[in-house]
Image (cartoon, rainbow, N blue to C red; front, side, top):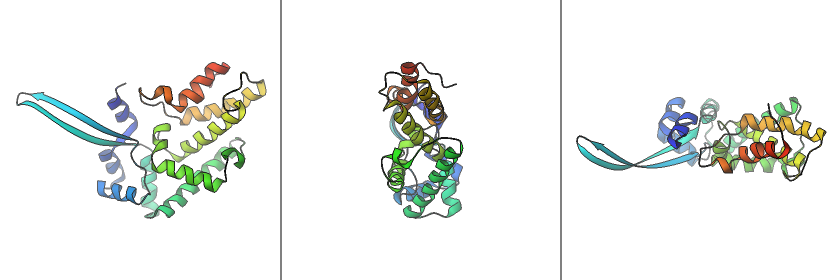
Length: 217
């Protein structure tokens, strides 16, 4: 798939995002300057050469692309009347924690030790990664539920497989690994063609399916 087709299928450009949120580009820029809204996931510079009856025309065009889940986040900012970064972080932390609770209710077992740090410190790290749009590239839609699924799924997989280094798995380990990989499968993006070999999907799903002869159906 061409990069332009991939972006048009899975992301909103700036105009589309602003239309979906009923805001203008200046409002979006102000949100980003106040660190309440993510930066774009992809910034595209196109060099165009147009040939027509009138002759040859060359120019450069720029566009930014955002994960479609950014609409949910922007709607939350508008509904909650959020204007400060601290308020936005608290809103993010509430949603992240609620998603953690939901996973625990679904039977996923994890402890704070899995994060390698205190939960507050972890939330600050994830918040900064959210703002720089890391998860807009890694996940399917950039939704907070997906971010939590990726975080927990990776931690569980690494814990069960000893950082994906075990040569083989017991039946009990395979039974524990299966739901964690299904969680990742639902949340992880597939990546543009030029990124596929470096994606988390390749490392945490495709490679492990081959290594341990697994199925995630």
